[in-house]
Image 1 (cartoon, rainbow, N blue to C red):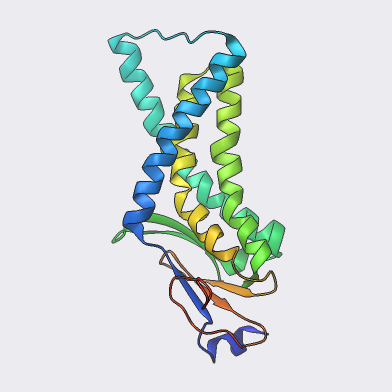
Image 2 (cartoon, helix red, strand yellow; image 1 turned 60 degrees about the vertical axis):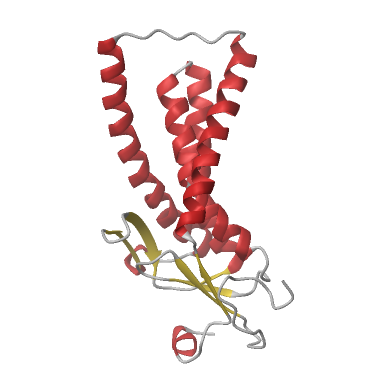
Amino acid sequence: MNMEDLESREPDRVIELDLRRVMKQSLWLTGGSVAVLYLVSFLVRGELSVSVSFGGFMLGLLLFAVGYVLLIVLHEACHLLGFRIFGGVPFKKMAYGVNLEMGIAYATTEIPLPNRPMRRALLLPLWLTGVLPGIIGIWLDSHLLILLSAFLIGGAAGDLEMNRQLKRLHDDWLIRDDPEKPKLYAYDPQGTAETQKDGTGPEN
Protein backbone atom coordinates (compact mmCIF):
# COMPACT_ATOMS: atom_id res chain seq x y z
CA MET A 1 0.00 0.00 0.00
CA ASN A 2 1.58 3.28 -1.10
CA MET A 3 0.88 6.88 -0.11
CA GLU A 4 -1.49 7.42 -3.04
CA ASP A 5 -3.58 4.46 -1.91
CA LEU A 6 -3.78 5.87 1.63
CA GLU A 7 -4.79 9.34 0.46
CA SER A 8 -7.59 7.88 -1.63
CA ARG A 9 -9.29 6.10 1.28
CA GLU A 10 -10.57 6.88 4.74
CA PRO A 11 -8.55 5.57 7.71
CA ASP A 12 -9.90 2.49 9.48
CA ARG A 13 -9.04 4.04 12.85
CA VAL A 14 -8.47 7.61 13.97
CA ILE A 15 -6.49 7.78 17.19
CA GLU A 16 -6.88 11.21 18.74
CA LEU A 17 -5.72 12.18 22.21
CA ASP A 18 -7.99 13.67 24.83
CA LEU A 19 -5.55 16.35 26.00
CA ARG A 20 -7.31 16.90 29.34
CA ARG A 21 -7.10 13.21 30.14
CA VAL A 22 -3.47 13.10 29.04
CA MET A 23 -2.67 16.09 31.27
CA LYS A 24 -4.09 14.24 34.28
CA GLN A 25 -2.11 11.13 33.36
CA SER A 26 1.00 13.27 33.01
CA LEU A 27 0.60 14.68 36.52
CA TRP A 28 0.16 11.21 38.01
CA LEU A 29 3.14 9.88 36.06
CA THR A 30 5.33 12.78 37.15
CA GLY A 31 4.42 12.44 40.82
CA GLY A 32 4.75 8.67 40.73
CA SER A 33 8.12 8.89 38.99
CA VAL A 34 9.44 11.33 41.62
CA ALA A 35 8.40 8.90 44.37
CA VAL A 36 9.85 5.83 42.66
CA LEU A 37 13.14 7.47 41.66
CA TYR A 38 13.78 8.86 45.14
CA LEU A 39 12.83 5.52 46.68
CA VAL A 40 15.34 3.75 44.43
CA SER A 41 17.95 6.40 45.26
CA PHE A 42 17.34 5.85 48.97
CA LEU A 43 17.61 2.07 48.62
CA VAL A 44 20.85 2.41 46.65
CA ARG A 45 22.51 4.98 48.93
CA GLY A 46 20.84 4.32 52.24
CA GLU A 47 20.08 8.01 52.73
CA LEU A 48 18.66 11.10 51.07
CA SER A 49 20.82 14.20 51.34
CA VAL A 50 19.11 17.57 50.82
CA SER A 51 20.86 20.91 51.24
CA VAL A 52 18.85 24.06 50.51
CA SER A 53 19.92 27.69 50.30
CA PHE A 54 18.29 30.62 48.52
CA GLY A 55 21.13 30.96 46.03
CA GLY A 56 21.29 27.23 45.45
CA PHE A 57 17.53 27.06 44.98
CA MET A 58 17.50 29.85 42.40
CA LEU A 59 20.42 28.30 40.53
CA GLY A 60 18.73 24.92 40.61
CA LEU A 61 15.50 26.44 39.31
CA LEU A 62 17.35 28.07 36.42
CA LEU A 63 19.21 24.86 35.57
CA PHE A 64 15.95 22.92 35.75
CA ALA A 65 14.23 25.31 33.32
CA VAL A 66 17.13 25.16 30.85
CA GLY A 67 17.44 21.39 31.18
CA TYR A 68 13.71 20.89 30.74
CA VAL A 69 13.63 22.89 27.50
CA LEU A 70 16.67 21.04 26.16
CA LEU A 71 15.17 17.66 27.01
CA ILE A 72 11.86 18.62 25.36
CA VAL A 73 13.81 19.39 22.18
CA LEU A 74 15.68 16.08 22.54
CA HIS A 75 12.38 14.29 23.17
CA GLU A 76 11.07 15.31 19.76
CA ALA A 77 14.46 14.66 18.13
CA CYS A 78 14.27 11.12 19.51
CA HIS A 79 10.99 10.62 17.66
CA LEU A 80 12.78 11.59 14.44
CA LEU A 81 15.60 9.20 15.31
CA GLY A 82 13.04 6.47 15.92
CA PHE A 83 11.41 7.08 12.54
CA ARG A 84 14.84 6.65 10.97
CA ILE A 85 16.08 3.64 12.98
CA PHE A 86 12.87 1.62 13.22
CA GLY A 87 11.06 2.77 10.07
CA GLY A 88 13.91 3.62 7.71
CA VAL A 89 12.38 7.03 6.97
CA PRO A 90 14.77 9.49 5.24
CA PHE A 91 15.38 12.62 7.31
CA LYS A 92 14.13 14.77 4.40
CA LYS A 93 10.71 13.14 4.84
CA MET A 94 10.47 14.24 8.48
CA ALA A 95 9.46 17.54 10.06
CA TYR A 96 9.80 19.20 13.46
CA GLY A 97 7.86 22.17 14.75
CA VAL A 98 5.70 23.80 17.41
CA ASN A 99 1.92 24.11 17.41
CA LEU A 100 1.52 27.47 19.16
CA GLU A 101 -2.27 27.17 19.35
CA MET A 102 -2.06 23.89 21.28
CA GLY A 103 1.19 24.75 23.05
CA ILE A 104 2.98 21.56 22.01
CA ALA A 105 6.09 20.62 20.06
CA TYR A 106 5.84 17.86 17.48
CA ALA A 107 7.96 15.64 15.29
CA THR A 108 6.33 13.95 12.33
CA THR A 109 7.01 11.87 9.25
CA GLU A 110 5.40 12.11 5.84
CA ILE A 111 5.79 8.36 5.32
CA PRO A 112 3.38 5.95 7.05
CA LEU A 113 5.00 3.29 9.23
CA PRO A 114 3.88 -0.22 10.14
CA ASN A 115 2.37 -0.38 13.60
CA ARG A 116 5.32 -1.96 15.44
CA PRO A 117 8.00 0.49 14.19
CA MET A 118 5.66 3.41 14.93
CA ARG A 119 5.16 2.22 18.50
CA ARG A 120 8.91 1.90 18.97
CA ALA A 121 9.44 5.41 17.62
CA LEU A 122 6.76 6.70 20.00
CA LEU A 123 8.44 5.21 23.07
CA LEU A 124 12.10 5.90 22.24
CA PRO A 125 12.04 9.40 23.85
CA LEU A 126 10.61 7.93 27.07
CA TRP A 127 13.71 5.76 27.49
CA LEU A 128 16.34 8.23 26.29
CA THR A 129 15.07 11.50 27.80
CA GLY A 130 13.03 10.11 30.70
CA VAL A 131 14.36 6.88 32.15
CA LEU A 132 18.05 7.31 31.25
CA PRO A 133 18.47 10.70 33.01
CA GLY A 134 16.84 9.15 36.08
CA ILE A 135 19.34 6.32 36.15
CA ILE A 136 22.21 8.77 35.74
CA GLY A 137 20.68 11.02 38.40
CA ILE A 138 20.54 8.16 40.91
CA TRP A 139 24.13 7.19 40.07
CA LEU A 140 25.41 10.76 40.48
CA ASP A 141 23.05 11.56 43.39
CA SER A 142 21.72 14.50 41.35
CA HIS A 143 18.35 15.92 42.42
CA LEU A 144 18.30 17.97 39.21
CA LEU A 145 18.51 14.94 36.93
CA ILE A 146 16.05 12.94 39.03
CA LEU A 147 13.45 15.71 38.84
CA LEU A 148 14.06 16.29 35.13
CA SER A 149 13.66 12.57 34.56
CA ALA A 150 10.34 12.51 36.42
CA PHE A 151 8.98 15.46 34.45
CA LEU A 152 10.06 13.96 31.11
CA ILE A 153 8.52 10.61 32.02
CA GLY A 154 5.31 12.48 32.80
CA GLY A 155 5.69 14.38 29.54
CA ALA A 156 5.58 11.08 27.65
CA ALA A 157 1.99 10.45 28.77
CA GLY A 158 0.66 11.22 25.28
CA ASP A 159 3.11 8.82 23.66
CA LEU A 160 2.17 6.11 26.16
CA GLU A 161 -1.54 6.62 25.49
CA MET A 162 -1.03 6.40 21.72
CA ASN A 163 1.09 3.28 22.18
CA ARG A 164 -1.66 1.76 24.33
CA GLN A 165 -4.22 2.30 21.58
CA LEU A 166 -1.90 1.09 18.81
CA LYS A 167 -1.28 -2.16 20.73
CA ARG A 168 -4.89 -3.07 19.98
CA LEU A 169 -4.11 -3.18 16.26
CA HIS A 170 -2.18 -5.79 14.29
CA ASP A 171 1.50 -5.14 13.61
CA ASP A 172 0.95 -4.95 9.84
CA TRP A 173 -1.43 -1.99 10.04
CA LEU A 174 -0.02 1.20 8.54
CA ILE A 175 0.06 4.28 10.75
CA ARG A 176 0.13 7.80 9.32
CA ASP A 177 1.03 10.69 11.60
CA ASP A 178 -0.91 13.95 11.50
CA PRO A 179 1.58 16.71 10.57
CA GLU A 180 0.43 19.14 13.28
CA LYS A 181 -2.05 17.57 15.70
CA PRO A 182 -1.61 14.75 18.25
CA LYS A 183 -3.51 12.37 16.01
CA LEU A 184 -2.74 9.13 14.16
CA TYR A 185 -4.54 7.57 11.19
CA ALA A 186 -4.47 3.78 11.07
CA TYR A 187 -5.07 1.69 7.95
CA ASP A 188 -5.86 -2.00 7.80
CA PRO A 189 -3.97 -3.51 4.82
CA GLN A 190 -6.99 -5.76 4.27
CA GLY A 191 -9.33 -2.76 4.34
CA THR A 192 -11.99 -4.58 6.34
CA ALA A 193 -12.09 -2.71 9.65
CA GLU A 194 -14.72 -0.24 10.73
CA THR A 195 -13.71 3.34 11.49
CA GLN A 196 -13.74 4.21 15.17
CA LYS A 197 -12.44 7.53 16.46
CA ASP A 198 -10.86 6.41 19.73
CA GLY A 199 -8.77 3.67 18.15
CA THR A 200 -10.54 0.78 19.87
CA GLY A 201 -11.91 -2.20 18.05
CA PRO A 202 -15.61 -2.52 17.25
CA GLU A 203 -15.98 -5.01 20.08
CA ASN A 204 -14.59 -2.59 22.73
